[in-house]
Amino acid sequence: MKQKLKPAINKKWLLAVSGIMWSGVGVLLNWVAAKWLPNFELWQIISIYVFGIVISIAISNFGFNKLAEKNRDRILGYPEKVCIFAFQRWQMYLLIIVMMSMGFFMRTTDFIPKYLLAPFYVGIGLALFISSFIYYKSLFRLKD
Image (cartoon, rainbow, N blue to C red; front, side, top):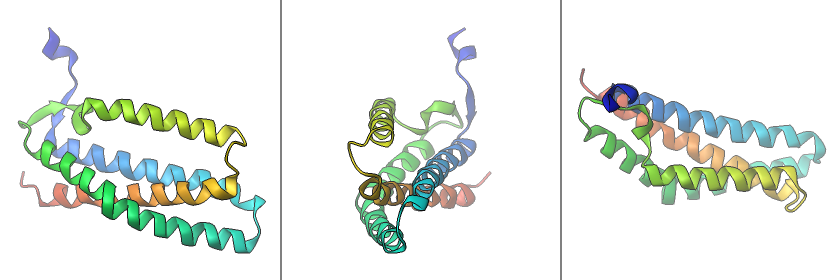
């Protein structure tokens, strides 16, 4: 009975789900930051994207790429069929909830001004998007 309740998919599809989730969240974060742009001067917009790109390079190289590689390796080590929610370790779901809550708080209050928050949204979003390609590369290299 327990096995019937677990939505299992092929690990190839799990790699696709992982990549799509990381890409989607990355695009979403950049979309949120882009909605704030009409409130800024041109020099602020340029600064937001310059700092955002620098932040994304650092986050990608020192954090998200390693995390995506660990997730990819774990997924590739799974049996052929695995639970669709296994693209992250269960502990990461707790971290995601905390990060989403913090993001919601910072977005909906003036605790941190948007011109200071926007580069981090761009940086984290771009880093997630860039790191998602680790999943896609593995997906296309995986033999059927």
